[in-house]
Image (cartoon, rainbow, N blue to C red; front, side, top):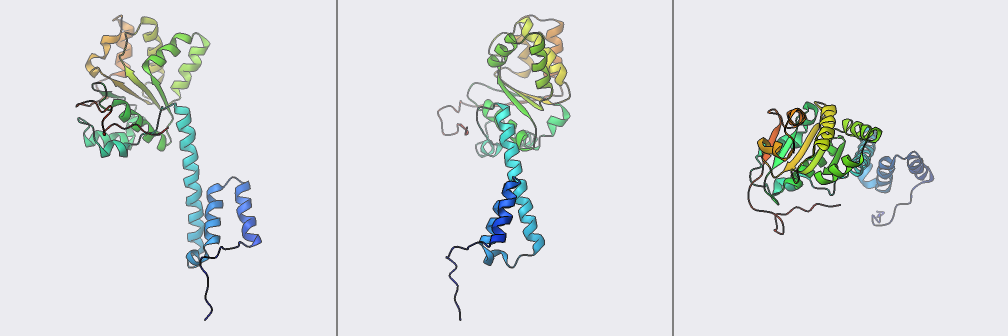
Length: 263
């Protein structure tokens, strides 16, 4: 009986190499990789129906496209690192109820225009949770834009007239606006006025995620001048219908529970 050396490399036929090259030329990298795998491993794939082999090619291409889309959206988001909700779930911060974690995972709050306010003392995982929620949104195809509060204030100070209008429209088109460390300084009238224009443009057309050491009911305290603009701003961003997630416990920083994420 003739024996086969299954360890020997498989030499592709010219027609097979040509198909793979055509897929690569068309930038169908997933299909090209799957074709090469199938053609290089005939023992595995010979018993597979034609339709099954085509399906695997299409599934491979879809996975590649999703990965490319994710990386593109991640770069545009300006998030400082990648943290996933599965990492949060494995070391659940105190105060984070499973139903709140499920809400962030389902991402329905984005279409509903519901804002998420993550509160708690320094180091308890507010930023990590907000970033993980934003990453989950990106995985679902939503656009995200991340700012630390002090960075956003600097940008708003520099934006006047047309440049501010363009910036406002950019955030208007963003599905999820993430503002990290709200309340670290008092907000001057001109900043509140610009923030109010931004949240007014975004009202019910996306979600804003905010992290803060303040309780949601006390967030007006960092606005220097109380009045109509202050009320309008808070009424659009911290409504009764919005959701507060209160994290408790000791700081994670420097401890095994700390989630640093990946760049």
